[in-house]
Length: 439
Image (tube, rainbow, N blue to C red):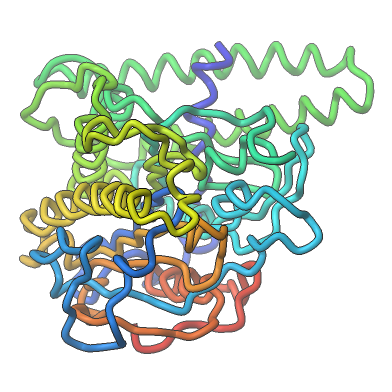
């Protein structure tokens, strides 16, 4: 029962104030097409000499790691000089991987703890989910090709919650991503074969309501028997359940989704390359069907040490990033970096092939941020982060260039993208000092 309830609770609420504003149309382009925003995270930083072009330019010559992106270069910006200083050690010592991902979309210094008293900040995707989530069936979508963890110790005294989650609905509540492409597909379109999915989706909503009614009634009876401390914990839980109720009510205000003429994925493939491609396909389908306009995709947890047999690499990724200037290790890491970028390129080309309602491509009407909270994995730095921005933002952004913002908080970029999505009333995020101009 607890597992069945957890996933629906991950979606933030719509904003009645924004919904009621006359003439307010968030997350749309000037043509009226949906505007999408996704954050795609890769682990352990990148080899700088293979990532960065030689100098800022308006005519990109892609370096080796980014070479798979040649076909979408016209809608690609490389953004240099963006920092997350709150991920640096400071007084907290070791734990750069936990801080890197915990800070990535929040801009805050996460609390060093391996216990239940985790503390980060509200991530930009969830700020947007609250404000524009009512425009789609899902306020936001969270995805991963890794494990799902919200507790335990992972990195030098930091909770695993920081490394395995990008989205935070509150400073103490990460939103665990979906790792199973079959379950992700069924959440979007319903279970079963083509032609039977809409009825399945309706049945699921009825079942969810029935379960929630029962659990809420039982919880009210239990509350009268608890002490103050336990009552507060129960209130937090009940708050999550009420969010699920409102999410179901929100979904019912939207038409049922179309039924893709494709088979439901069988589950998680054994090979990571197939797994990654399938999850990117699910995200493309979600954007194409306008199921949500905000998404996060954690490709692998920050600090991942998986080997890459797909590339003939037996050593772990994290181990190799501590290369100590060993040329052989550097080249292996560069191959891994390029492998991740190749999967991004396939996804972007897929979006570019999809025609949106205004005649432009879905990539044209999207903003896809690809990056890592670590810069140089060998030294665990968090300045000059490897960040790409793909898509034209509905015609508001220019591609085919490299810009260096020089010691600027990455939080400024997050706010700038939020503004384009229709975000209102947010002056600061984490360590932000303003907005980025001339994107």
